[in-house]
Amino acid sequence: MEDFAQNTGGGGYRPRTMEISMSQSAILLLAHGTPNRLSEMSDYLQHVTGGRPMPAHVIAELQHRYAEIGLKHELLPNGPPLTRWTLRQAELLEDEVCTTVYVGMRNWHPFIADTVAQMKADGVTHARVLCLAPQNSRTSTGLYKRALDAALGNAFSYDFIAGWSDEPLLAQAFAERLQPVLTAHPNTPILFTAHSVPCRTIRATTAGESAQSGPPPAEGIQNYGPATDGDPYPVECKQTAQAVAELLALKDRDWYFAFQSQGVAGAPWIGPTVEDTLRSLAEEGHKAIVIQPIGFLCDHVEVLYDIDINFRDVANSLGMELYRAESLNDSPTLIRALDHVIYGDLALSAEPK
Image 1: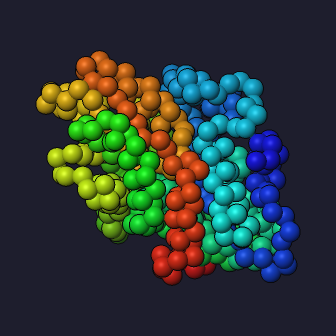
Image 2: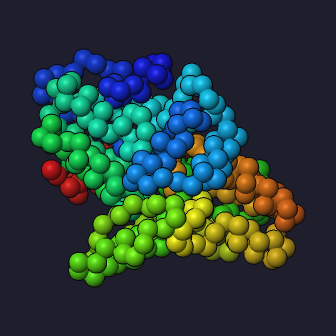
Image 3: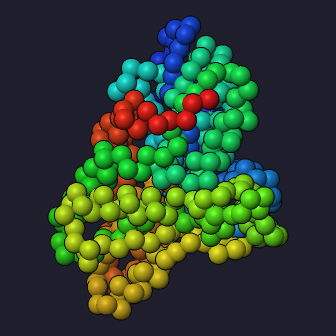
């Protein structure tokens, strides 16, 4: 991988393959983004919350969590885990499909706008765009698309693939990571997890009603916009978990599902929480649990801190051991899944623009 600072500068992420034809069709991967230094936390969170400042105690708590997973005040040579693994996935996909792959982040460098500008400068005329959040939601996929549209102008046309939670190779990639843990710890219940979202963002609204009705919550969640249909996110998360369970021939009593990483302030977030689920399992007499986050494609703070540190502490306090399946990260099957989603059957239903 090229030097992290070079790849994430103000000009946007430049792929390794720079021999671009004048009528270039490219791939653009969109992701959440994460701060590169502890001192950037406040600015980073304002991007997450749509410009609303976060309370000082929330900033301090998040700085603590990121410090626990290795973020420092100086720039890490290879960047924080989320950025490092996302850029690596782009490299592997580029090798797989022999097409230039760009990366744009919504909340931090390389910003989507900077990457779009780079693509335009490189002569890209059309892109296939995929959000690296498999389960479709207004809180992730929807916001990334809005950021892309705001940055795009008439730079190039694109096909946007909104959700790919039902991609068979995605379930296979998760199953491959989970199988070794199940072999090492047989007869241990499995808890699949995905990131929680505010309750208000998944409910359907009537015509003219905003999902942001009423005062904003304390943490400043931005307006996700009106929707006449409920958000598909919770259903798609559980469907991904179900697909992994079926591949591993798990019985219904063998696995559970919970939403993790609820917001630290403000309005309610969807559950059940991991903490409540762990308590229930402990009360049933379980002495161990295997967790697999199926809403994340790589290591980052919600995996390395929330699961590996916080949930492990909760489990230990309940007399339970906690084991986690390795994140997908550079999984060859994940890269094949991305290829199939972008160029296979699911890509036929992509939204053109």
